[in-house]
Length: 133
Image (tube, rainbow, N blue to C red; front, side):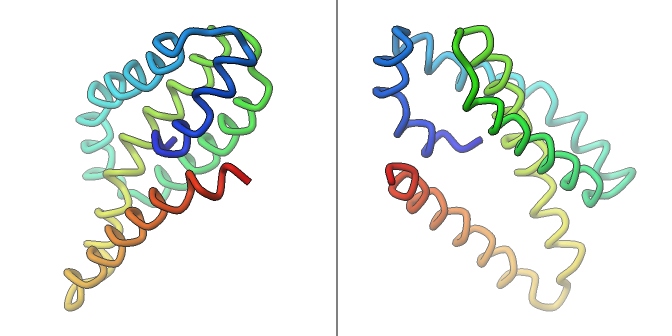
């Protein structure tokens, strides 16, 4: 789950739920640290089994966690929904997509990876604006 989009919700959610910003942003840090721990395991999985199934399962799980975020009312519930989503976004998604692109595109691999990087950058720029409406 992208931090850029979450930043739009910091002030309204902390105000509405009565949480501190430190408590709120702690989920980002914990999720990032968990991603650091699982990334080597994800890399081994991708090497052995490929990234297709991992990306599909990660996408479904992240979508479910995003829906769950709409129902949170306590800090524990927020951490339970956000930390795994952040971990998946930073681990399997960030490792799996470039691997899939590199395996699929041979001759035009640099262009394909550049399009991926550009699309991610554009998404990070546009989503915070779109999330406000």
